[in-house]
Amino acid sequence: VAELVFGLAVMAVRNGYNGTSGSELKEKTLGIHAFGQVGRNVARIAKGFGMEVSALDPFCPDEVMAESGVRPVHSVESLYAGNKIVSLHIPATDATRRSVGRDLITLMPKGGVLINTARKEVIDEEGLAQALEQRPDIKYVADVKPDNADELTARFGDRVFFTPKKMGAQTSEANINAGIAAARQIVDFLNNGVDTFRVNK
Image (cartoon, rainbow, N blue to C red; front, side, top):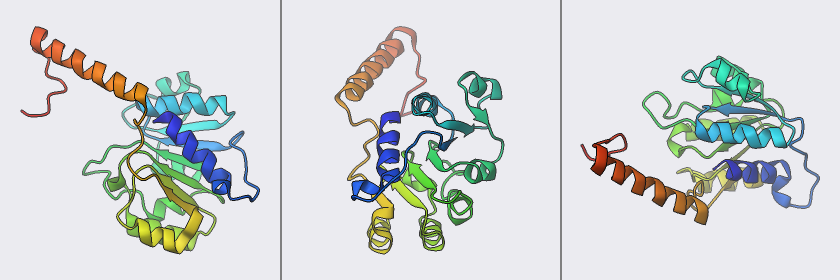
């Protein structure tokens, strides 16, 4: 997923490779919305690009972020207002569904790029359209196609991009790793009764 984030980021800042001049990721600010395993890998890769990274995650201690060279922020408004690129990694919960909309997106600096490799449900799609209308400098790229994708594409052209299907783990290595992880969980359940990842209870 982390690699996909940067594929989308590079495509966005290079204007979809449409022949016009774009910009570089170096020295750009990146805000990571949720600093779990994927967010940490995004931060690691971002440092390699020479980006300045901050993150928001109320469940992650500031010290953990600092150890990764990431600046902690403590409000969602600060995350969006303080970063040229924001990468979403929040789950879809009652608290986060439709939580990212016009008010947050329009806080982003000029030329902002919002990247969603989390879940489409966390986006307020009507608010996203309003933000793109209000701020012609903002782009939205995702590997989760919103319900209003056709409308967004028709209205905003190459300022929006969506992969044909969820692409976060669509690599041969990721599929192998997922299979190995599932096998280990089954063995752990059979041998030790561990049901941490049990789906049907």
